[in-house]
Amino acid sequence: MIAVIDYGMGNLGSVYNALRYVGGEAEVTSEAAAIEKADGVILPGVGAFGDCMANLREHELVEPIKRVIEANRPFLGICLGLQMLFSESDEGGPHEGLGVIPGKVVRFDHDLKIPQIGWNQLNIKQQCPQLEGVEEGSYVYFVHSYYVVPEDESVIATTTDYGHEFCSAIRRGNLFATQFHPEKSHDVGLRILDNFRRLVQAQ
Amino acid sequence: MLAKRIIPCLDVKEGRVVKGVQYVNFRDAGDPVEQAAWYNEQGADELVFLDITASIEHRGTMLDIVKRTAEQVFIPFTVGGGIRSVEDIRATLNAGADKVSIMTAGVQNPKLISESAERFGNQCIVVAVDAKRVPREGRDDAYLGPAPDEEIEWLVHTHGGTQPTQVDALEYAKRAEDLGAGELLVTSMDADGTRAGYDLELLRRISESAGIPVIASGGAGNVEHMYQALAVGKCDAVLAASIFHFREYSVRQVKEELSARGIPVRL
Image 1: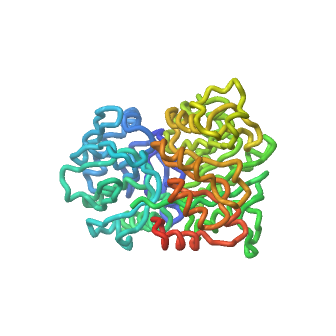
Image 2 (image 1 turned 90 degrees about the vertical axis):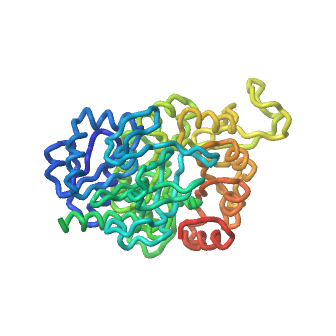
Image 3 (image 1 turned 60 degrees about the vertical axis):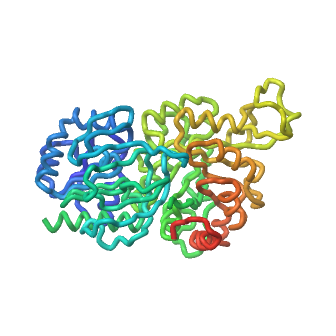
């Protein structure tokens, strides 16, 4: 069973639908117990960083999430679910994040349009099970104004160019998180979700 | 590199597609969900459902379409038409739409833009700017717009472009951005339905002053028009209905032609 964490931030239906479409068994939940006993966990997120973190705290989900990641359980963060893994974000802040990945979340600072909205390409930096079958240069769907800057570059799984190169996905063992939205990225995104489902199943 | 987006638009009336793709092999050519799935397979980057339902009673029908589309189409899609309140927006997003397009209600009640952007995030609020050219001398005296050093200007029109207002389209675009719009959907009411090309001047003026993405709409008759909206109009995406409706081009053909002319697209 894959737990899709519901903490009151946005519509989780698309993640749930896409997961079901690739054959995953999923439940949307805000219960710490359900999350801790799930075989895999997905942390989605839309909205402002500070609000998302506040909601996670209010639902008392910070420690359960850290424990799941600590135990190297398959974990997928999406969009804000990537950013919140970091130490802190500049968005309306600074705001403290989960601190699972040392580094910062910063705003694009160039004269291209912000937010970046649309399909952009992946430069693959890590061969990993989560990206199996995803080709160099594949297009995925982004909507964001901020991006992550990990202190340890070895966690970078993909980069993307928007004004400059930025980290568009991280991976450390079974922890994987994307700035883009796999649930909205057509075949490439479904492939990534299917890879995650298989990783969960293989545990 | 960020790709320019190609967005087919389906006009939906009382749950049926009235302007969408004409395709003989559909089991049910009027089914919006089936058409959405077909565009998805063709490589559309996003989809727009424009609800032109006249009566309130059929609003629930649109939500059902949204829900069924979200179960099988894994690209972003937007619902526009008839969105009047924060409650309408919540219902549409909860049904599975990624974005809503705010049209008439945004002009009548600009607070709807700021309130909904704050509540649901800028990324899901697309503000429609339906603009029509008017000779500057013909404007209403009550209008206080930019200095009259040009012969034409664009005024916002509401209710599907049928009702003129005294709101300057370029100013409205700027204001919508300040209020928290994530994208602008700019339609030329002069060009819409003519298939003679987008209003490039309107697009360029709005796109150059906007810090958020601009979607061109109204007037596409061929790929050259789309190329111009992107290259000359400087837009980030092009929306089209009839060019796909009559099956003159598939989405893939459009993308291949644009790509050959140096426009970055997702193929």
